[in-house]
Image 1 (tube, rainbow, N blue to C red):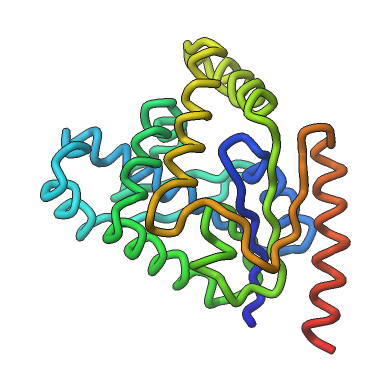
Image 2: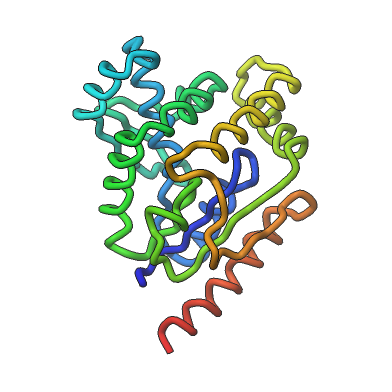
Length: 225
């Protein structure tokens, strides 16, 4: 086993927020794997390569990403450019889901993620962290919530960032992405057999984080005993 906590689940289930807070509570580093796929999707869109497989696979060869912390905010740097805000649009989200179905894309991201996680003391959030990338993590979680609840969360987030989109569009995108993520042949979205499933629909962020924190502590003591 490795000292990694994985938090998987569909879009809007609360993975990113709770992962950041749990990482801080544990004094671990936070690995935003979703940002990696989003950054690559943005790169493909900027180069008009999202529908050209040969082109986006060529871009994949020189793709690089890093994370820089500025206070409480994590900045995402892709090929030397800060793309933190640019990767959060519905279009980028949808293409991130589409491109993530490509075997070469998942292998590249998995390689980069594993290299970061091998150092240990990581909270990694995504969609296949506990099933594929960090199958040997000592603690695994899978967050769920209804599509309507997740759409409302996402809609508020986009409004706060002045991204003009309707609630119905966000809900439609979430339902479509759920279908894409769960039905893809390579690393489909599903909980690991040993993952702890938490429904966040009626829980506060604080309650979710506290729940996970206590379970991580128990898992850690069992692992080390």
